[in-house]
Length: 411
Image (cartoon, rainbow, N blue to C red; front, side):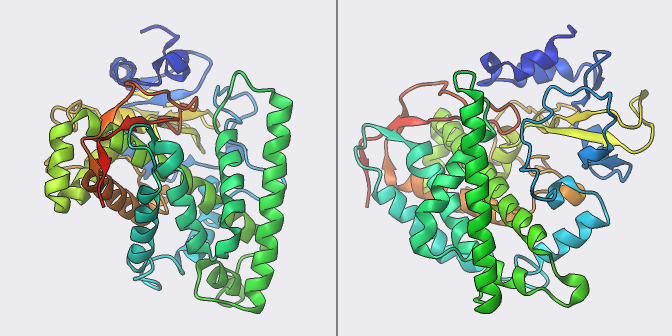
């Protein structure tokens, strides 16, 4: 194996199909080129590490000498404290527990299921507005606006302010995607301005919700539950920004990768149209086959650890290649085959362990409803270009545009 394989994974030329590179990588389950990160690519090792308390998600534990080509790719505004995604216990557990209280069981068991009506209405409205059936961009016209609208409803953003949220979300999403043609200073200024505007808006909304609480998630987060179970305003801002950006990005890629996979497998697309009940297992197989998050960078051991006979020193940078683990033939039979009838789909597509995807129940429901309705309403859909142009980002992998045509958009 050449030392250039990590460069190849990051190389945009391989974005449309990184899976042959992952297959090569799995021949060395713990790969290290002598200077960069330690890269783990096999299923059982990744699964074990995701549950290993000796592995930290807090970049402050990285040794100063650790080299990582992805360092800083998704940096948060320094003015905000790290979100719980980038913290370890006990701080992680406290913030995640408080965030989950208004979102899921046991305190809010019906929150996600209660959104079905809203979700259906948003999906229906977006499909109604697709316009010319011969020229549809499913990313710009559907997959991007859908989840950010839903997150606005979840947080309790007034309807009249939703367009402003879309602008901020678009700018912040672009900041996660390297653009070799853009002016770095101008790009940084736009990102900084959007973060500041979003932060000021959310701070005002939090203050308003503290005075006049509703039944939305932001109101319940702002109210807290006693002195030990309340977030500071800065923690609230960081958490709200995390829900907006992380929740948005994952779902956009899941829907877009999903529709691309279905268009490449027209028999499965037709089956989904006839049998909408297969949507749930189909989305699970999509999360294995084309996960929206390809890898988890910047994990670091708090002590020296041994993985498959390789000692990884304390403070080193590690990458866990989730998408490679999902196609590990030691774990999945015929792993490069898309099979919605696959019986055992314990994939890594939404992570695992304490940092498993917080918004997974909502992302799953959004993808199930979106793909089912697209399959039902688009008559004879087909790709206008394959492969489509991909986003630059190697971590959050998905098409930047998905241009399709269909004979008609059914009512």
